[in-house]
Image (cartoon, rainbow, N blue to C red; front, side, top):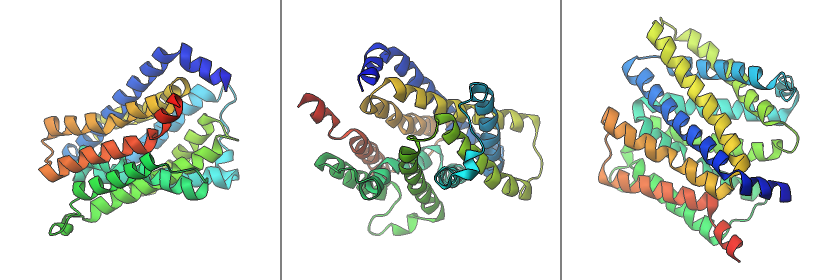
Length: 300
């Protein structure tokens, strides 16, 4: 505990730099996926396959020589396998909906994973939900209703794509709960690689089924998006190593904000006034769910 505290005190700049790299990479990944889906008409399953394949390759190159990567564990441990399957399905849901919903809306809906993770952790891991967290959850869920059109008279706006995105958020929440248990026995490289392995198993059959042709520009964009996603994930993990959860969570909560603003300016993604209000409530409620009560504990 003292070692961890010392690291937080002596490496805030390193943690901040890692989080900024993560933020940039995740934003780049989302915008590239939008271009691939809406402009280049590349099948999202191909994007998923590239992400999983290049992610696995980078993980092997970086961590296998040090002996911190154990790929066989992805098939030997049911908990690690469930992390891989749930992670692959959750990522697929995000990739499928980012085209029709837009990068901003799909990311905002996906960002509610922290709300569902807190609820799941309360039942599965017996983590306490304080008043601030409960209020944050309610605020985020109300904002989600506005964002997806789940208001009286406009319920029909909550369609097929919104449902897939919401399911993806729930799956991502389940992944977080599983990861909290896996960190006791598995390395970060092995945990991340499990998602890549099962992402390939899920993505390749569908990618081949819908495959037509890929131009050199498609391959460049697919590779760039995959590399952004991989290094964004690795940088986020590194950032949380040197920053508190509150500080790291604040950085990650800005990701959907930046992606949404970029989507509006670059792709003219439409947001009505109720949806904009809902987006703000989702972000604020999610932030309070992640860091709620921590400030009070520190000052007490």
